[in-house]
Structure formats: C-alpha cells, structure tokens
Image 1 (spheres, rainbow, N blue to C red):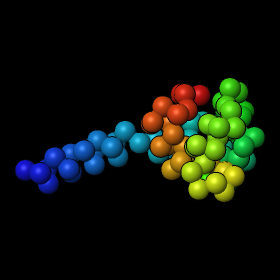
Image 2 (cartoon, rainbow, N blue to C red):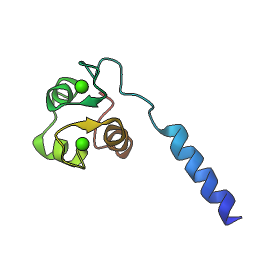
Image 3 (cartoon, rainbow, N blue to C red):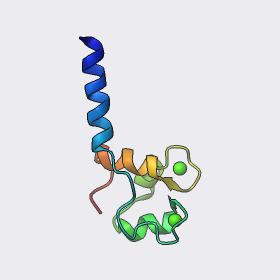
Image 4 (cartoon, rainbow, N blue to C red):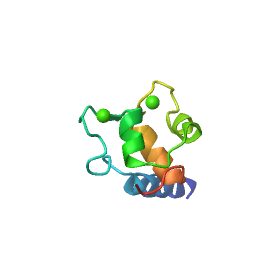
Length: 78
Ligand SMILES: [Ca+2]
Ligand SMILES: [Ca+2]
C-alpha cells in the first residue's frame, strides 16, 4: 500500500512539471536562462530571488531550477 502511494505522488509530481520554458523565455535558445533572460521574463526579479532560483550558482537558470522555482511559487507565471 505504501508503495502505491509513493508511486502516485511521484506521478503527480511528474505530470505537474513543466517540460519546457515558457515560450520566448530562452531567447538565445541555449537551454538555460541567463540573468538577462530571467530579468526580461520577470521584470520584478530581485537578486535575492535569482540567487534562490539558481541553486547551483552557475549564473544560469536551468530548466530544472526554473521548474522547481515556478512550482514552489518563487517565480510567478511570467
Ligand atoms: Ca538562454
Ligand atoms: Ca544554475
């Protein structure tokens, strides 16, 4: 029974995940969002939020980082 519950939660989590950035966000199409692309998409973005979103601190927001931030409410819907 416990295993079924875990699988269900995992499935819902996957189904709710965005599979791509919102259209136009990744302007140079390199697969990650640079700071400039993030600011263009989120004009109210602050340094604190950007740092929180960029969890590995490589200066770019990956699709995974963006998805987590969007789902956690850190970022709005654009
Ligand atoms: Ca980009
Ligand atoms: Ca990053």
